[in-house]
Image (cartoon, rainbow, N blue to C red):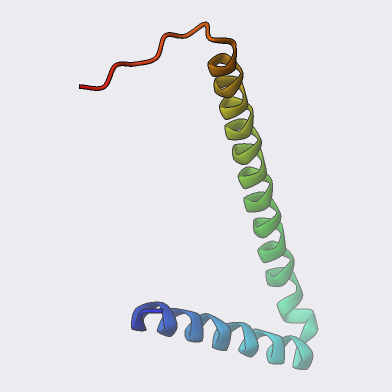
Amino acid sequence: MSLPIRLLTLSAGAAIAGLAVYAVIRPEKIRPAVVETIKGGIKAKDWACDKFTSAKKEVSSMVDEAKSGDVPAASVE
């Protein structure tokens, strides 16, 4: 892993650890931010799952077309 990626990972881990410690000390102040972060993560997961499902259907459709032989193969020169 390259140095910038390691530094970014370390920084993110430190920020998360700091938030976790702060959440234990002052849970009433950090809770709304954590809830919004979780909401964002759920939205990102839903978006990624939708894109993956769409791509899977598209590839499956292309495989079915290729197996049926309806589409002529492209010539390579």
